[in-house]
Amino acid sequence: MLEFAEELETEQIYQWEEDERYYDLIAARKVEDSLRETERSLLVTPNWEGDDVKEEQAAADEINEQDEASRLWAIRIAAMQQELEELRSQVEMKDAQLRRLTDDRENIMKNSSRHVEEMNDRQVREEDLKQENEELKRQLKLAKEQIEKQNRIHVERSKLEECKYAEAKRINAILQTRLAHSKSGAA
Image (tube, rainbow, N blue to C red; front, side, top):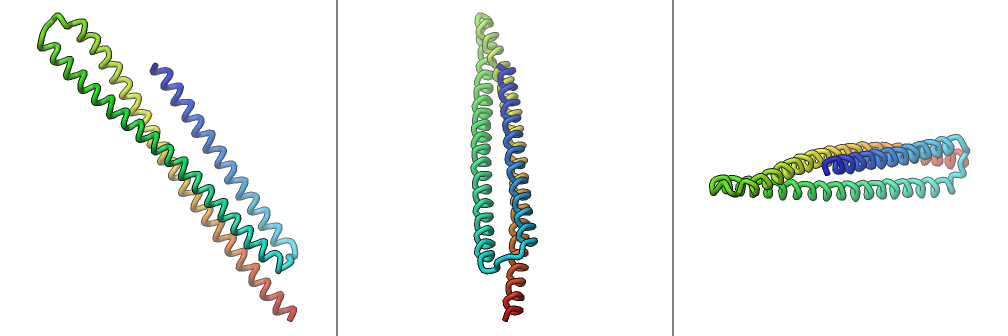
């Protein structure tokens, strides 16, 4: 049973790592696409009236994508926190069972020697519960570390998205300035 739990935990960790790599890859591709689009827009002589609308729409689309990514991260973190709470409640339940078994064992030892077999069975169950409890505590610790890691990644991505948004605003300001200069030069 312990081996199955370890295999299950290992599979969960691999799945979390694969999910992280997938989201990191998607984020990196979006950044690359955004940079390529920005370079193209700076290299091509723009049609100023149409480009303003396109720039505003692109900025709005980018903000919507960032909001959706943040929402997805929040959902994922909430699911992990729920799993963490479930593990915590399992640990508490196993602790209570362990205390009851320990108390029962002590009572049996005091009462008589004819319950030796029952005591041995309870001791075996107690050891099993201790092992399960330790495993759940270890899983709880891993889940906490995973949530903290996910939170750090989310914060870093948010910072990156804020930088991208600031860069988009800066580029938009440059384009607005160029537009104003071209209009004043045309007049």
